[in-house]
Length: 263
Image 1 (cartoon, rainbow, N blue to C red):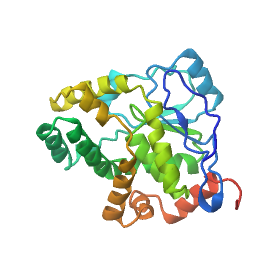
Image 2 (cartoon, one colour; image 1 turned 30 degrees about the horizontal axis):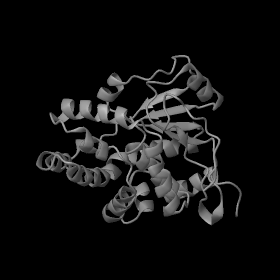
Image 3 (cartoon, helix red, strand yellow; image 1 turned 30 degrees about the vertical axis):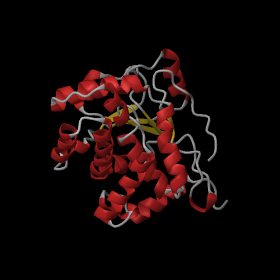
């Protein structure tokens, strides 16, 4: 892994560069092109200035309307960056009933771990359109682009890990990059957000220990997500194809986001 110089945002500490890792043939993934983040509801004036210096062109917001209303972005209206809200809800499909049943039947940290696994089996189908949109932003000149959800862990993590896989990043580095969220996310704030969401959407409330377990980025979740893609689509590359990123476009992404020709 290599070190990036992405600014640390006080109000959104999980903001970071998707690049900076080694990809296909040992080529470095370019920095300064694609970023991932949590929401921007608490960013400071200094954070706004730091973002301005990155010359962002597009923000892809994966949150639901309720999340946006609860935590509206603090970016100024004159930020000169296009904001696209692409609602990405893994619990809107058939698996949501099974997900809620896990919580209802076992409202403990053990049940929370099962819930996390269930979430990462639901995320790939839900996040396909977001992956395509981020890829389109890179390929059609709308980068630098940042994509984010509320905490920058689950939906954002899924899109990031797939993009990194398509660029040839090792599974070991993908996992390490994924769990880095644990050192960046304000866990108690995430617990508070989860409590509000669960009460409002599902009428379910859990104790803090259970909610803390649910708000961890867990290494096994990466394998659950990739195994789901392979089971449903055949491979991660075929998953991308299924959501409109052709093999030719996958190669174009590598051409756009990998440094040089060889290590």
